[in-house]
Image 1 (tube, rainbow, N blue to C red):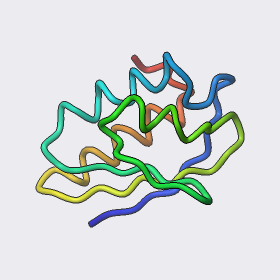
Image 2 (image 1 turned 45 degrees about the vertical axis):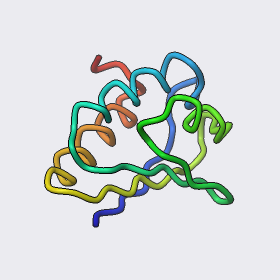
Image 3 (image 1 turned 90 degrees about the horizontal axis):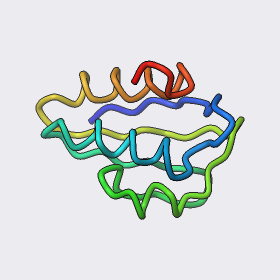
Length: 88
């Protein structure tokens, strides 16, 4: 299991468009992914789950991956988040 904290730098946080991008990428990997804020943890492959976090710009989230390609999954998602979802 791998964990990584990242800060949302895009203006929309994890609302509709970024959440859709996040889930699309997450579903390309076999590993399970969860996203955690201060008070909630959700399935990172569920757009409803991601949007239910209500995470906005400047908030810290934790990515938690478990599986055979967890390292690649964490690296890809954190790179996308840190770029403000501009690498897509």
